[in-house]
Amino acid sequence: MLYSFKVALRSLWFYRWINLLSILSIATGLFIFGVVLFSLYNIERATHRAPEKFTITVFLKDRAKESEIQSLVNRLSDEKLISRVKYISKDEALRELKESLKDAAYVLEGLDENPLFPSIEIKLKEDAFNRRDVDYFIKRLRRLDVVEDVFYGEDIFSSIKSLYRNFRVASILLIVLFSVAIVFVSYSTVKILFFKRAEEIEIYKLLGATKGFIRGPFIFEGTMIGLFGGLIGSAGLLALFDLLKGLGNPEIPLVRMLVLPPEIVAVIPVSGLILGLIGSVIAIGRLRY
Amino acid sequence: MMIQFREVTKIYDNITALRRVSFSIGKGEYVFVTGPSGAGKSTLLKLIYLAEKPDEGSISIAGYSTDTLKERAIPYLRRNIGVVFQDFKLLENKTVYDNIAIALRIRGVGEREIRERVHEALKLVNLRHKADNLPSALSGGEQQRVTIARAIVGEPTVLLADEPTGNLDVDNAAGIMKIFSEIHAKGTTIVFATHNRDLYRNTGKRVIKLDSGNIVYDDME
Ligand SMILES: Nc1ncnc2c1ncn2[C@@H]1O[C@H](COP(=O)(O)OP(=O)(O)OP(=O)(O)O)[C@@H](O)[C@H]1O
Ligand SMILES: [Mg+2]
Image (cartoon, rainbow over all chains, first blue to last red; front, top):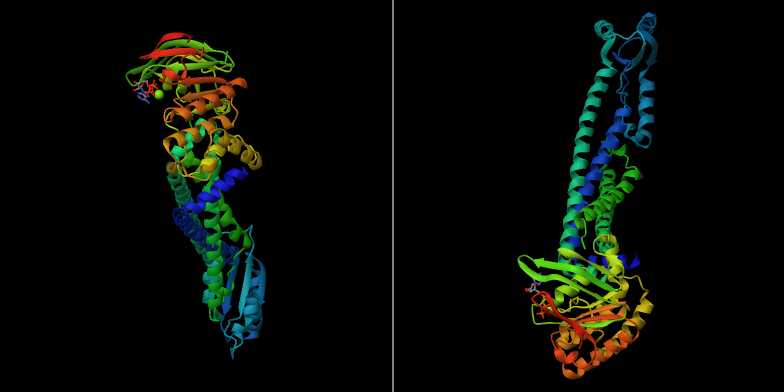
């Protein structure tokens, strides 16, 4: 075990250019792997905040009077489709926005005037749900004088959702593709090293070396190539994240909301290790005596 | 019986290297295998250390038959068989010391013990001063002695030697013959392939003579 490890380290150093090249290609692959996971994670987080299915948001005209709004709220409360109505004033909307921006709230400090619209949030009854009734209801709302615009949650939600679904499918394909590529890099590196030492291996066999003794160093080597590639890939991802955060100038609060979970940083070297291991095991194949 | 051949035939492509060969060698015997070049001496040894499989017949070594031997068991069986290869089979990128040490490393012997035993083996073949050289820096005779040291360092129960003195002058050859006698005295079974009659004449040892793959003589010299 220890001997295999020493042999592997020596071989890593002896063939350092081949190995470095492999490590860098694996690092690149795993870096992209990480970027994909990172994007996927953040898009999912973003879509979780998206409006829900049974919610209609009615944006009111800025000049709408309190009394008009109050009567609309009262009328809506009587609708049989609706389970709950909530009025959100301009000030409340601003406060909510500030809250959701958290430490990026200073973004809004330069504003002289509140740019937001007052709105009414309508929650539909889920059991009485009927798309045609809802559409008709929305049409009626739009015709009202005090109403600026109406958003139905599901429309936005479903388009974001389908975007996310497509992106997820693409990501999975990409990750599978890169995994195969990384396995292949490890496979061919170990194969080359194995061929370079074929004569040596024949002699070991004749002297009574077990398969484990012969395989050990190559498997360690492939695994370490994967692991080092993964560590570099992780470092690259962290660097990219820092760069994004640094660029995150106040006009783009979106950047400030990005999150790089430690799980993704950790999963990259682990994937590298596993993929490197798989590649080297395939490369050695079955040893015959 | 340490080694037993039953009707063994070995065919390479279309050359019959051994034809229905039968013999047995007991534990602790010292046997010479002789015959002209191409007679099948090396093939016979290769069959013993399982580098080749018989095409017909069966071989048993230390009680293990080639018919039933599991591939997994081969390395362990080989550890009991030291081989002096005709073509040396030294690792060109490793020092003399490492070439010998590897035979013990594959057995999982600790480095401290390896150091002791390798130096002992080197002393035996008169090569202590060359421990740190690469094989390419050695003469043919010196390389041959490294191969012998590697074959005996593991203290095998069977020692197979394929022309182990082929590259040696008379003095060195006599030295090697003496080492073999000492190893034999400790109970090691030795099979010694050579076409040099001088090495076994008047020794009173058993000689198996091959010609074109057939045993033509098997008796005491
Ligand atoms: N790998 C091989 N492929 C094909 N033919 C082979 C192979 N090995 C040996 N032979 C043939 O088998 C026959 C016996 O070869 P072997 O090496 O056993 O002879 P030998 O008695 O050891 O000869 P020498 O004294 O020259 O070493 C020869 O005709 C040789 O050409
Ligand atoms: Mg020969």
